[in-house]
Image (cartoon, rainbow, N blue to C red):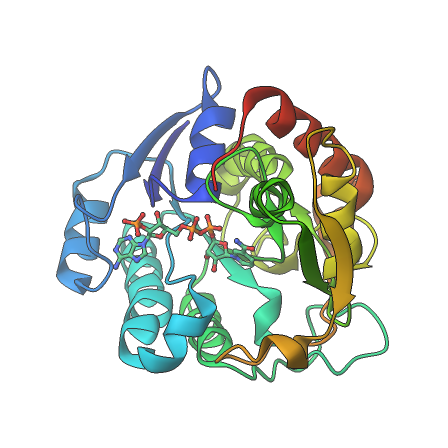
Length: 293
Ligand SMILES: NC(=O)c1ccc[n+]([C@@H]2O[C@H](COP(=O)([O-])OP(=O)(O)OC[C@H]3O[C@@H](n4cnc5c(N)ncnc54)[C@H](OP(=O)(O)O)[C@@H]3O)[C@@H](O)[C@H]2O)c1
């Protein structure tokens, strides 16, 4: 199995490369190899590749800076994946893309299913939704919406909270934002394990389309952080709840955006692990091996 992957240094990109060792060959393209603001470079990379599947892990993921740089966010998150899917369709290659819970407004009283109306409330969410629409116009495309991704790799919420809890005496964490944490390593293992299935599946197969991928259960940012911090014997901060409003970030966040993964479970037989088990394991591993700020 040969996977052409856009993204090399990002959190999910790194997790996929680690998970693929001995199971699949991943040809990972960094920004220097292929800038996603250059559709011609994207097209050339896919046409030149000898691969069975194309996976896009790269994106403009900085939610607050995206408010001031919408053109760049749309170029990377919408136009670039659209070009990837179009070129894959020309070559009859399966294309797998990642999206986000940020396509929703967060005004829900239950976990979101794939057929719920997406109504993004910030530039990042709007650019990712435009990306979904662009790629799903092509056959043999799978989009996995994920949320609150953590892993042993890159700078992510779990590693960042562990770091802050060692640095500060008081750590204020938002307690009025709810969602589904996603174990980036479980995601990577799923992507690698499912690649041959996508590669063999014809147009119209139920493995293509839009899916939600997350750990089981829903939590607040506060309890998510606490679950990790409580595993670290060297933590010194007192962790206190605060509100989104108190943070006054440039981009509004959906207040509640848990993802229902029933469709993924039915299509792939995949059973997500409870979020707390996965967070505690990852925190234990990070505490044992060290983590980046
Ligand atoms: N992290 C989360 O909590 C989360 C939640 C929901 C959905 N997602 C989605 O999951 C996917 C993977 O996210 P992640 O957490 O792995 O993100 P990440 O760690 O921020 O990595 C993003 C990668 O995209 C690359 N990139 C950005 N602009 C580029 C450009 N113009 N050309 C080429 N490469 C570019 C970055 O390269 P550089 O290193 O060179 O900047 C980086 O390697 C994304 O689609 C994201 O929207 C993530």
